[in-house]
Amino acid sequence: MRTSYQNILGMLAAITVSLSVSADHSWNNYHWARTANPVVLPVIDSTTPEWDIELGDALAAWNSSTVLDLAITSANDSSRTRKRCRMSEGKMRVCNAAYGANGWLGLATIGLDANGHIDQGTAKMNDSYASYWTIPGEKNHVMCQEIGHVFGLGHTSEDGSSQQTCMDYSTDINSQFPNNHDYEMLLQIYSHLDSYNSYASGSDGGGDGGGPPACRGKGCKKGGAANGEVPRGQLIHRSTREEIWVAPRADGGLWIHHVRLAPEM
Image (cartoon, rainbow, N blue to C red):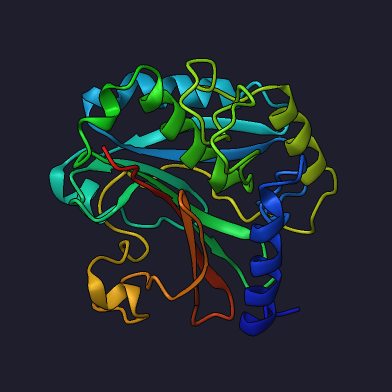
């Protein structure tokens, strides 16, 4: 069944309102389609050496889940590749760059196919907020959280309280990585199997080819898109710490952006 854009907007609005008070932090039950667990998800490393440790540690931590099997299959950390942070169908790309003082620290984007399954994703860290990354543990925290969104996880809280997980919004030094509740949540999200795999196999070399680049600039925020870029679409949720934007895809699917807003420093 094809995804209804208007229906999904209403569902997302309801979900985001309830996330701050719910122990269930599935992000609307979004997940990668697969015929068996674990999800063998290729990761494209488009991070500079300054983020290599955080990326490696985050992938290792999420790999403690029995439903995930993450491996870096290709890499390209050129400035152009990191700035564009292109989608690659069936894969996750992780990027860092100086994206500008645009109000966000981290940005996770997922593509949903016409059946509502994740079929591609990016996780971006914004180096323009260099002062924030000096807070002990926060590079790990944000890296781990943006990657977690690409699997279909939401936040455990949005009020700044600590659940000692990277999926909270605290600056607790113990909130750098997933906790047992995150792994339990993944088991629940990935408890049923699908009739096909929405993730890819093999390597594409990690270059700047593949899907569209992330949308940039004011026109994207208004819903426009130039040069085939992923549009930001419509704002459907905003709090003091996050925004969620949704845009339709030409194939009947959706682009969904989970924005971690930068605090006042």
